[in-house]
Image 1: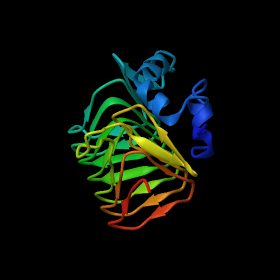
Image 2: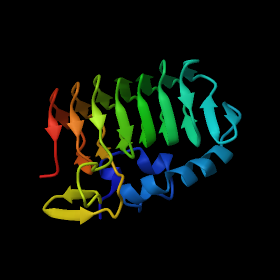
Image 3: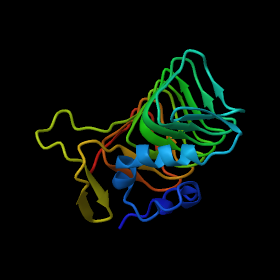
Image 4: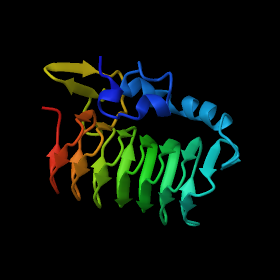
Length: 200
């Protein structure tokens, strides 16, 4: 069993009741989870349909946010960013200019600064993705498109054709690095610039 909380310390307090889910099951159900969370938020959020934006958040006028989505206090969504298919942006986090952030979570104090693609992924707290880093979510080039993850010596079939990465707290992903689908990065991981991270 892969415990999301071993990677993301604030997970169970942010998403209570989800701590026993696998990362890919959590992502598969994220939209429903967010809709429920939106319905329970206080009046510090401006809510429109299934999109909730904290009153202190800064969402650029050119950004596109498609629900369900929660953008927490003092978060920043930059110019021409696209948030879609379910997204949680934690306190003091950044989904920066020209990013696509899809069906994913980014926890407190983390940044996808600019020109990133994040799909079907879980990003912990105080993580930084430099410019151009990509968390790939799909095996476009393979006939068998199911995403597998490696947990120690065990290979696990997620049963999903789309699942990105689980990035532990305080990790650093260098500019233009690409993570294959199904990558699990422990807390405090460092990925070099231009590095390609595969399931070994």
